[in-house]
Length: 187
Image (cartoon, rainbow, N blue to C red; front, top):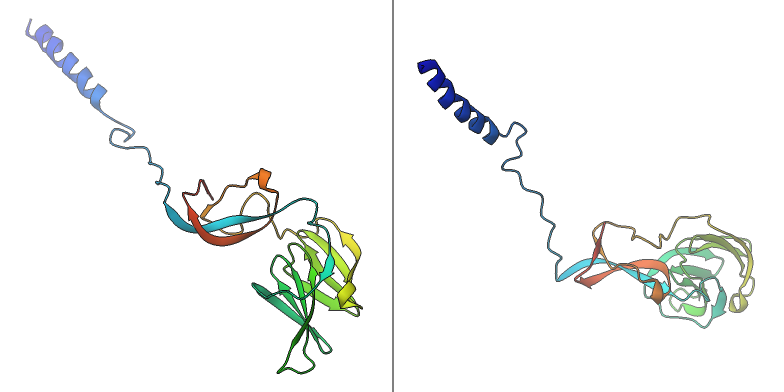
């Protein structure tokens, strides 16, 4: 009888003990909690343009230099990229007195090269060739579509928080860093 009472007592205790064991180590593990969205954070914001003007390339009166980029000098003329917007044309015959001549509007421009009277740059992700023999009336000569991967219209070039793309605002032609309030997207 003692053996039967021993089994009657030990077996339930053993089952309860084993049931409470956590052989995979999950008992005290908690699921990672999502980070709270900050009220303000430095991040990326899309730059929009309406679809009708993003491929138009034209000469305009001189513009202010806000986000000056790469430069190229041809003779007495300096060409400077205005990041994302186009190319400044500046006469530097007298270096102490540069004179802005024109601005060539090219949406998304970030790079450029010049050979003879042809300026090569990007119009967003397209390669464009522009005749600059008359800077006040620059003309598009050729376009090769989707040569570059300069602008991703869905995600910014860096990591972290960013403003989600809102297609109702137009086409994303670039990204800029700025202070964001309660951003909803992150990469």
